[in-house]
Length: 464
Image (cartoon, rainbow, N blue to C red; front, side):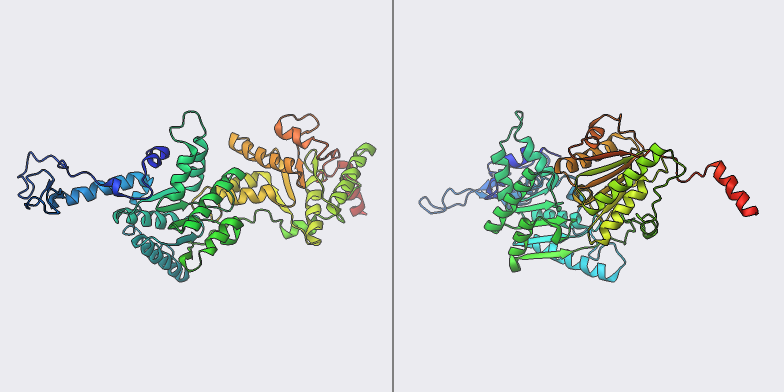
């Protein structure tokens, strides 16, 4: 695909007359065919009129060149459009009823299909497609863009994250187009398609740029087509107000995926765990601990109780398996929920698996949406940190979550078998930061393992 900056640098946004080819020369090789009887293969002719006539000497494009001119115009428009491989997405290649068997979903898609065709035939107002990945939003948007090109309309199609990347690149010393030039071209293109507008962009800067683009097109009433996997109420309130503020000239269409995908309840805690793992059921006596070990258990229990009463900063429990770390974390979540507060519980290996899953076309939620929810939930519990598969991707995602919550001092509970007393690195450094929270080692025997002496005593008691 041609570089976005090169495309926009040449794109005429206020008129399409620059796409016309001067009729001074023929557009194709004429050596192997008979000459045109009208123009003699010059591609133009002049009417035989007397000198002084208003039309005397005016060059007229010959009809033999009309189809070639239209073809070249379409090729140029297509190159400017940034559609790339999406040129295969047309209304002819799209089932008007979608790919779902559900009657209601088919009706919704058919209505969206008709709306996209009407928009393409006469671009005006705004058209917004809302729905999950795999529902056909991009296909509809690309089909509309391709039809606009067939109708000789100048259209620009861009995936929103790619647009933000290209805008940032204009600040680089090697960029052959200025930021203001690129930004103005996108704002003013006759028909703009923003594909993949989600609830949150990566940075405040990107969010501000999107707001400026959307606001300009709103004020100028420029035809705009938007797709989003986020619900309308999840979009940035400023952008949502512009979409809704278009009134009758804005159509918001819902589309749905082919089937209902069953995904696990990320962030939720199984009801049996909540009932079983409470403060009341936590045994501070432990499993035959020494005095020092019992003291560490009691300290962890009291810290968890205090945190549940008033979550502030971070609370990290670390120690061997079976010492009660998860029990205390779940008890905190249960206590907060009893008081009407949210708590997001994530077993770290499953969390990373789920984030990978959101890249699948079958996912009903976007990666950005779930990642932002994890980063910004009022209370996050990361259970078993350190047991996830240690890939660079996983390390990077965990690092981003932890850095964000550390910087914003958001209440977070961490359980881990890592020895954070000696653990270094960017994650360990933040967990150990005493200005943010507490780091508590639970050093006690595994609750799940009953000592042999206890088993022998139990056996003797049962034989009596």
